[in-house]
Length: 176
Ligand SMILES: Cc1cc2nc3c(=O)[nH]c(=O)nc-3n(C[C@H](O)[C@H](O)[C@H](O)COP(=O)(O)O)c2cc1C
Image (cartoon, rainbow, N blue to C red):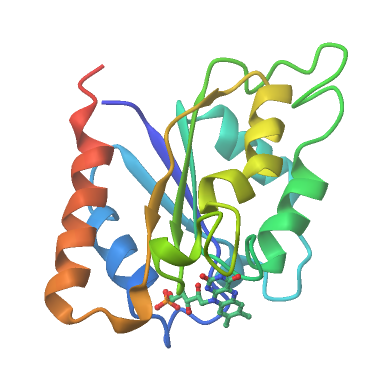
């Protein structure tokens, strides 16, 4: 199976219902490395070399996070700003990430109906992930269809368990 690095970005995992359950469901998979960014870098000082080594060591990169202000929590942006260096991720000789699969896994408080042209958010979550998608393109990674969980604030334990199982099955379905 594809070695998979899950970059988890949640500022308060203890209070999380969704992302905590999601990550619990995949962290025991032998080909999956869960990397909790807020736990590792509480002061936003990212170890660039370590992060680049982690990226190099995996074939699939997952960004898992709650949707915050139509994007990710801030540390994941800081991580991108620091780690995706010219000459490593893009630009001349910057081919370290070329050919790796990339998957966004996002939980959103808003319902799917809110993320339509006639809804209050106008854009779909997938459309709002455009900066991530273009980053993936620039780094010559392979954008996979994102996993987006909507309306999560109303979810009961059963709905959370179903989502966690879906996530786990996506990360295990690839037999290559
Ligand atoms: C600072 C902040 C910003 C948020 N922004 C959005 C948003 O733009 N769109 C949305 O649908 N939900 C938004 N939410 C709701 C979160 O996406 C939701 O609380 C989260 O997905 C729940 O996951 P968790 O149980 O792992 O914390 C926001 C929540 C917070 C705290």
